[in-house]
Image (tube, rainbow, N blue to C red):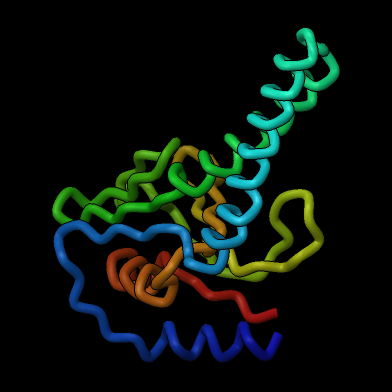
Length: 164
């Protein structure tokens, strides 16, 4: 709670002079966590498949190896797949699955929310479009204060920060 109030004050005070395209990638801490689990899982998977191959094609080793490879690949995909781009020249928010015009955004609400399967509360930007589609962007990116300050500047009175 205390962190969120300080975060809101930083966003309110932040003055931005953005470029035409601003890119926001995964924050270093999350990247380090996912790399430190993804790479060992891939190495363990390769080792299991190798051992299964050497032991007269033992299926159990190969299955475990494939499971490890799959989970490690998902971790690496998350690292390289996460990214949000604000194209201020064309007034668009671009992401992996989202191509959204700023004019199409009805409201943007910033609040603390539980996202995903975990019970950890994080700060999210909740975008509601004019066709009533909801897009939740968890702020696990680097330069999150700059991201919200740019959104606040571009959206004007459609941007709100909820204090819980």
